Length: 255
Image (cartoon, one colour):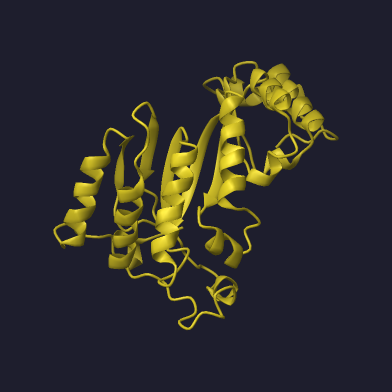
């Protein structure tokens, strides 16, 4: 991310273009840029325009709560300066799962943020994490995550499978009061949760959501456009449930 107090020299930034193709896209990385004040984001976007005039799209991560403090006018102004796509890691639409993992959001707060971004003309890319509720909350996690997407259909929707490269203790602590605690899903149970999610995901006929479930963490790769391809996606999931499709082995999965 460009820092307002340390402006990028023109020669350094333009060097990227001088070495090859013009820079077309910029991602405001290493955190949630929407947590910055609108004036700071404005300065960053103006600087990108000045130093990299070939850039046509700027995107950023975005927590729902950081949209709350920005007006519709603020968001529209940022869009006019080149901000185009917000990557919103909702992770779940189930309030209990969100509370237990300490997300600091609810289904309503996530939907409100998505609708506000969309009304300002910004594209939204939403991520849902399968397995985040463990076996105990799998069904409601799937159902209410679908409800969130139906409430505010995003431009892009991706589903990943939760992984614990540093151990699951932190997440498990939020489930300690449940009789079974936090029990991770097996690969077959993840496919069942994916089917439950897709079964509930009846988007409006005029929705145009690009769906991808092809991250390295997934046991089964799926892709399509919703709602058009939902019957096919359900059929592919049912094939996997019957064991007719080979799932990605555990050793080959990644973050």
